[in-house]
Length: 578
Image 1 (cartoon, rainbow, N blue to C red):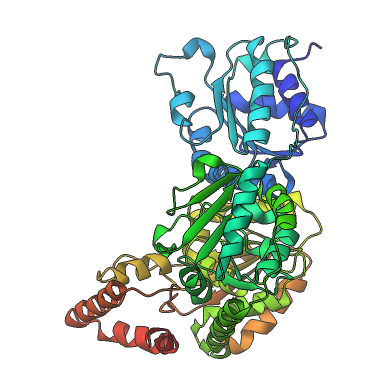
Image 2: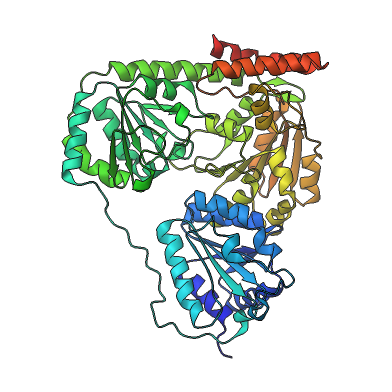
């Protein structure tokens, strides 16, 4: 039998290292599905919703380098978009196969017809439609190259009729090229930076995900400069461990120590970070930014020196030019602040809450304690992200995935699917909010179907917790943020996995231990305090005023009970405001 375009597609995916395709099969995608079945070495993961498949592919790509998802004509590939946005903004190399209606029906408003070029235009590094067998292999090779080397999503749209025709050989290269280069600034720029560093006495280093492979160089630089090291959420697992000068995160999810250090500095060095919140950046010190993406330099802060290079290569070249500083008074002062911050964090853990209102800080600290040294965590956007960022500690072997740049709900559970398939044998723990889990609840069945031993911890606060807080600090009474939830443990049981609901703080330890030791998938539904607040590193007066205004409005509208519950739940935060 002659090789079809669908066969050629699968062959090229295999050669590029793709292990599985996350998809829901149907009509225009069926030839590809059949080619996967016949080829035999690629796994077809039948997700319940294509968005979950795109999230899973994004997670696998972040862990293993490359992944694939697919959606059939019209509604199927439309469902991919949110997960592809997240993958593209996360720098995940994903190839997305968007099968379409037959090419003869293009432009006729045919059933399920979409314009894939317009549809995927804003979430990719490559986006084309192949309409002939001669086009396809060249486009496919270009798509793979773009995804791998530009670190993003490549979309190939394929008409259903094209996948069944005989393949044609490409006149150009078919293999995958993923070269690695040494990239560092020129010697004069490094000399200039070394001279600047020599003149400054209070230096802070702040690392993003671009510094992930430069842990040892960052630590060496910080010790030479006696500089504290802060980091973004995405960089935490790669920078925090074995780092005596680390002072935690800043930003909306962060803690006061890094914010304080950055604002007390006379020089801030940004390494591989595109940290989004300008309000957390100092404005009265010199700022140096080093990035592999030079177009990002200066777009978040008033940078006085910008250098183009990979963080690892640049620091290797810079370190021999740096003399050891002897004055460590600034470093000691910032580490003392960080010690005080960690003591306050522990007070939130020691108070474990009460029945139906278990404190989430307590839960997250136990997850950290019981999780494996090389566990992979996925975190939902919202309050689950806060507790994960503050209480899950790096070991040098752990990984943490989330929708850090796109900020979408519902990412943690499907990302856990991709992580479990990408890294069999490693513990995978999803920290889910009840709102996020509800959105893609059907894909619990995917976890069961493929026997993935994922552990899901639900921070069930019966509300959209982060949205509720956003409304309150803006002076708006929270409304339409409450959730009516099923018993997620019963849902898990119905889906074929172990399910446990915990309402009493005294039962949390045993429930987590039981779930983590269980050989198959397990879900722990923990009834956390809906009024728990996450204080940012710096509390603005307008936020305090907004919270007071919203509480007053609620009292005037007869909701005094809710106001009292909020204050009772958060008395421990008062020390942060004094």
